[in-house]
Length: 203
Image (tube, rainbow, N blue to C red; front, side):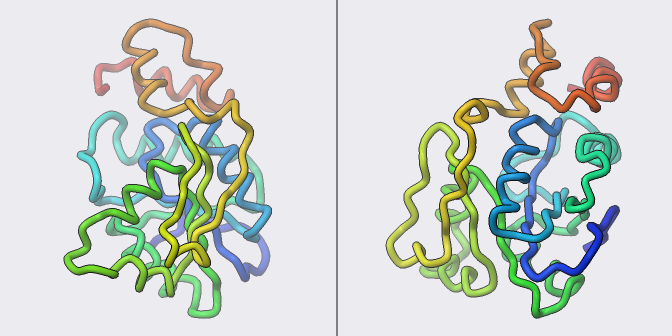
């Protein structure tokens, strides 16, 4: 794992927020800020390999630039690049970069939680074993996530304002394609860059 930017100070509880950030939205930032109720630092993690979807839209370098601009000067935020995309792989990279003593909490929405919990890892019970290495903080997203009973001690609800429930990066891209208003859905700081990135025919 390579940190493009690292938060200031000592971290005991690290919030790990993997995503494609295509583009970063106001919901991404709201979810990350909600995580500070539990963690000391939130690292936005952009994987080079996406296990659940293909790579399309903005280039990797553009997404990093959008992220760096979106988070501004908040000293609690970090940005990191992981070589692989499964939570267990990212957790392993975090351990190598941050040390074994840091508690890891992955931040995600309901849809992402369902995807990672139900992913075929090759054998029954594999994800439950992974939860020994990290915990999940799950925000509502078109519904509240109900964790399987054996996992409830390691998967926790992350309350968020309901205004972000429907907001998604795919909606932003769709609005751009259709010529509909979209600027209010992303951090104001990235509007200019997003116009450069998403109006040049790449998406």
